Structures are given as C-alpha cells and as structure tokens.
Length: 277
Image (cartoon, helix red, strand yellow):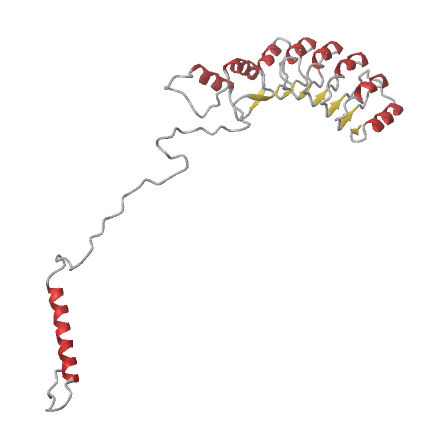
C-alpha cells in the first residue's frame, strides 16, 4: 500500500489526507472482524429456526380418514376365488381385498354357472350383470341358478340344452333387458314366461320352435328394440299385429319365416324407423 508522503501545507484543505485516513481505518476494522474467528456471533444477527418437516400429502392420505377401495367395472373373476372370499368374510387372515365382494346369495350361483363354462361380468358394486353361457352344458336343471342373479341385465343361452322349463326361472329377473336363445328348444309355452320380462329390449329367437300362437304372449314387451325371428320359424303375417306394437323397434330380422312380401311392406309402413331384413 502506498502511503501519502506529503502532508497539506498551512492553509490548504486536507480532503485527500482525511480520505486516506478513513480508508485505512475501514480496512483495519475488516481485518479485525475476520481475525475474531467464525465461531463469534455477528452483532445484531437473527437466529433462524428451521422449518418443521411434513409428510408429503397424497389424495386420501389423511391418517384420520379410512381408506375407501375403488371398485373395478366389468371384471371377470374366478368364481372359486370369489366363493373363497365370501367364506372368509370377516376373517383378517387370508382375506384378499382385491377380489370382488359378490353378494352371498349370488356367490353359489356364480360358482355353479362357471363350473359349466359360463363367463360373467360384474358392475361397480360387484354384482353379476352379464352372463354368457353360449355353447355350454347349460340345461334346465342348471337354470335354477339364474333366478338368483337379481341384477343381471344380459343372458346368452344360445346353443344350449335349455327348454321351456328354464324360461320359468328367467321370468323372475325383472331387470333383464337382453336375452339370446338362438338354437334352443324353447317353444310357445316358454314365451308365456318371457312375456313377463317388461324390461326386455333385445330378444333373439332364431332357430327356436315358436309359432304365431306363442308370439301373442310377447305383446306386453313394449320396450323391445331388437327382435330376431330368423330361420324356418312358422311365424307368419298373423304375428304382424303383435310385432307392430313394438313401437321402439329399430331392428327386426324375419328371414326364413312365413311372413309374405306384402306382410314385410306392412311392417315397413308401420315401423318406419326400424331396419327390417
């Protein structure tokens, strides 16, 4: 550092001298402060308190609120696993929360119907709403299990061994809206029971044994939107007054029946919004 070698003469303003002195004094204060060490507190310093730690917040992560399981829709599940869960209901050990909780009254039916090849779908409440038994060993004896499926919406019994006796069990299913009976031995007697299914929207009777006489039992199915009567059925123009009562009909298939060309034209006039084949 270069110190001043000349001092102000008498009568001169000592501005340069004073500035130099102040600079030296400031440097001495800085050096003295650093020499005191890092452990000495700084005057007027404010002690900072670290912020408290919190667990990360996640949806549903409140420890005071119970967890709510989110059910899955349209699940296909092994009936044996479901029955096992029903049997263990209330036991903590071995209870699998990932399995659907099928109502007890439906669990037995689910096991029996799956045993003959049935496939089931469940709704968000774990209730059976759809069952497909097409081409299985389903018969009148096994059909008794269908009556337990109070929430079922769709049943496919095509190409099975069911007859009119099985239809009596279906009559108890007030929520059923889709029924497929293609290639079964159902006759006019069975249609007496089907006429009670007022919620039915789709009915497939292809390759069954019904006639005009049985068709009269279906006149109360005013919610019908799809009706199939194909393949050599003895259904003729006599059934047209019944068919045109289905004002919501949008699909009608009558290929192979005894309905005449004139009868088809009449159906098209009365049901202008329906596709008729």
